[in-house]
Image 1: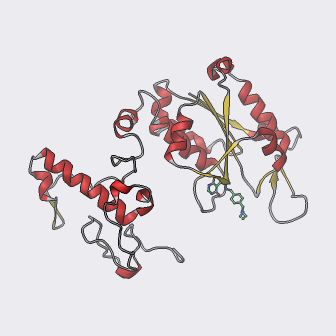
Image 2 (image 1 turned 135 degrees about the vertical axis):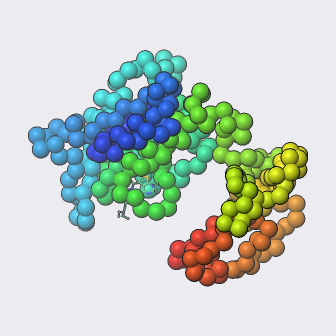
Length: 286
Ligand code: 9D3
């Protein structure tokens, strides 16, 4: 797979692309990644890529021309790698808070493409006309505000790199059907807890069943833990899964938790009643 990234902060990608799983994928030849500075395509001598918004308001808007020229230049490079004769071409992705929220099915689809191009926005946004012209797939990382799309591009590069054949994580994900273990009806489950030596640490014991050597019993315990954790922490993952919900669940009681799920105990003074299902104090309004 070939990836092109368009950004006004190309240096942000240097450490990322020289360390990490994507770096490993690049070294193995499963991935190539080319970062382009949008500023290099500015037509004016001041290398200006943004301007004040028509209609007024705060901040700046990224101009059409440098972005459009950068996309055309990147896409015309190494056309052999995009399999365009077979209807391949380049999948354009705009990282944007207005986009589809990223989840593993989209990652898996992106990982199967020959070429991806990531467009990272900044400032208040991008002139809408160049978005209409380029028709990118718009992807968001989630419902919070970042200062630009670069971290989003890195998140997707990491997620697709580990799915490339031969890259660390690929075999494991193929065996587990990616995101997580699934119930027989296909619902995703969270992972079970993991333990390593020593057998006792800070007065805490490893669950006895894991020391028993009974592999069938261990597998059963892990299945139970996955299901119990998913019910407690991410009931949304089980919403459409009748097999995972043999009985209708009782209405969730506020400030109560499922005692059977392995979870950290707090010693930071935060009252239990404020703890969300992930063992952290929930933000206001959550
Ligand atoms: C304070 C500016 N916001 C006004 C309501 C709009 C806004 C513009 C540009 C908010 C964020 C950004 C920059 N963010 C991204 O480019 C971005 C992003 C994000 O902010 N959240 C989640 N995913 C993504 S992907 C790209």
